[in-house]
Structures are given as C-alpha cells and as structure tokens.
Length: 196
Ligand SMILES: C[S@@+](CC[C@H](N)C(=O)[O-])C[C@H]1O[C@@H](n2cnc3c(N)ncnc32)[C@H](O)[C@@H]1O
Image (cartoon, rainbow, N blue to C red):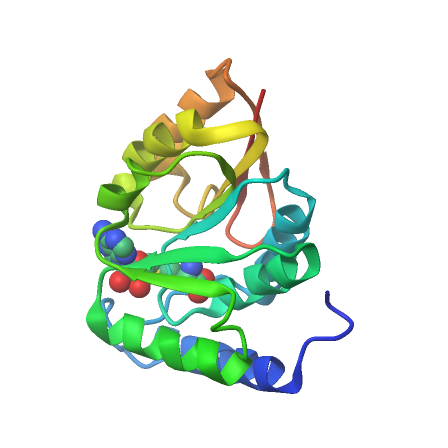
C-alpha cells in the first residue's frame, strides 16, 4: 500500500498537505479550510481499513479528499470501494479533482449531501472513518454502530484534541457492550471501536 503510492496521488497528497498547513496559519475562514488529518493518521486509518472485515467502506466526511486517498489505497489493496460524504459543493468539487488527479475516481463514490440522511439507509458497514463537525459525532456513532458487520470498525478522529466536546460519545463507546473501544494517541487522537 505505502510502498507503491502512484505518483499522481503522492503529488496531490503533498499539495493538499501544503494547502492545509497554510490554511491553519493565514486566517482562512473555518468553512474554507481543508481541516484534514495529518499524514500519520492517514497511514493509520488505511492500515485499519485494509484489515477490516468484508462490508462497505465509508467516510463521514470528505473535505478535499485527503483522508479518502489513504482509504483508497486500502480499498485498492483489498478489492473494495469507498463511499465518502460531503455537504459543501465547493469542497465536493475539490474532492472530485483530487480523485481524478490521484487516479482513484473508479473506486471512490462521492456522495453530496448531509451524511446523516444517507447513513440511515446503509447496512453491512465493514469500516467507517468519522471526521465530522464535533456536534454530530454522537448522532453518527448511534447511526453507524448498529449497521456495522461483526468485527466491523468505526474510527473517530479528534478524540484527544476535542476530548471535552467528544467526551459524551467517547464515554458512551467505552461503556457500550456492542463494541470494544479504546483511544489511540495518534495525530489528533483516534477512537477505535470494533463491533462484536
Ligand atoms: C474535518 S473535515 C474532513 C476532513 C477529511 N476527512 C480529511 O482528512 O481529508 C469535515 C468536512 O465535513 C463537511 N461537512 C460538514 N457538515 C457535513 C454534513 N452534514 N454532511 C457531510 N459533510 C459535512 C465539511 O464541509 C468539511 O469539509
């Protein structure tokens, strides 16, 4: 996966990393910032996605498609496809360009709209990466967990840098007997839940 990242994808990853770093420094308004995961989180979520049981691979939410590229590496490796959700048309347009340049538009479906409306209609999720507005993590958790296959994984970002806001969902996951869960101190902190 990591030893043969296609040149077009590697270039797009570098470009988005530069834009994301600049956004964080230059006062770009929050809605316009890419707010993407750091590279080590990208590798981590890709490794877990490659190890997930059969089932849908989904990402809630897309932004410019940076984390989706890492997940696409795992999907390519395991013969699967990724569905990723984005509500802002401007971000969706950037993500489409990302997937074209990275050569993964054949294995990624970008769904435009509020992910929560689509999650309720899904079933048989093998893997979900949750990187959303912090206020909706809890609602997404409740929508995703019942739809995970046995052994299915839910990974939620920001479990450390937004711990106070996400604490109710994290506590819920740690006590939830449907899953085994823990927080891993990688990047901004990843909550990992594995369904029984
Ligand atoms: C933290 S960013 C995702 C970063 C991405 N996972 C990455 O690492 O490259 C969150 C994104 O969610 C989008 N978003 C906000 N509300 C949404 C909703 N209700 N449904 C789908 N996407 C939404 C925002 O426009 C933003 O682009």
